[in-house]
Length: 403
Image 1 (cartoon, rainbow, N blue to C red):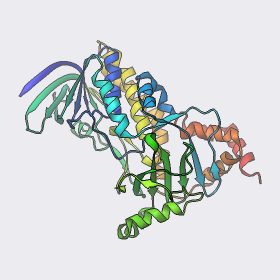
Image 2: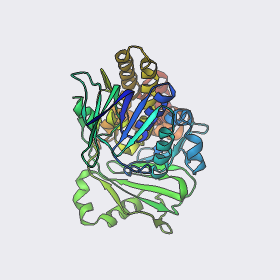
Image 3: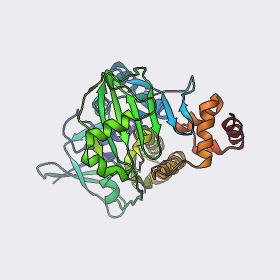
């Protein structure tokens, strides 16, 4: 067994969060081992909305990634929302935009950017199988497909390995799991109408759906039925999918569209929240917080959480108090994302909208001022508590009860 010493950080997982953390930590002067179990540089994640919220756009630009995905045709996104209480809620003019781009485009570009960053040593084809150190993590033990093992010592271990994080499990970081009462089937289509670049989402209660345009003329068309309908879908998958999409208000026109993929499905996607750090170890992306993908938060939170970690831990890795820095990261992560995750997990129960939410939907559809505040929360730039501010509530009441 060989040992590789001298790393400041060992990052397990070279997807969105891991590559972001690796590049930003290295740019701050750290020496980083970026460990990825898949050997191919162009590997990519398939279970994803491909929707990067506007709250994460500054990180995409900071990485130097924006120009790369824009050159590949990434869609600058804005979204319309339909509810039975409001009809369509239109995106306010002038709101910041994020990006919609498939992972088969995004992942290789970002991984190549990270791997080429001075200070990053990219280690594909290795899986983390254990943590080094007695108590406080001091690195990771990795294994390749031939069962050859290496020990990689590092001051900081970062779990960027997804909702089923092996790093979290090995570090004894347990998560709070809240079930999801919907399941998901989606496919990529070409020629979906209307072809105006807007994303659309339907909250049908209890079923949901969305259409998210991406680059190369592809649109992800997703159905999220209640789990009570699972036997029906198992009996006739293609027919059930087609009927749900066709039955949407102002349904997307697929009559002349061509399906570009098989129907992809995911039956279990529970909401999982873990503490974002412990002494010597940090979690980023889905490893820290895996929320309902219906709301398109996963990519954005991966970028943002990795940036927060780099900003907190980067200076400390050159000689400061690392554990104090990790505690600051944990608090920022909880403050910025905790309220959003709580609300998203609650809505994943497929419950009907409560009276305040119904009022909000109606007001946002009628009042551009309320719509702007709603968009700030929906894009995760502001806390959900924003909608409970007295001034906002008063405006919602005035606008929502207007005939």
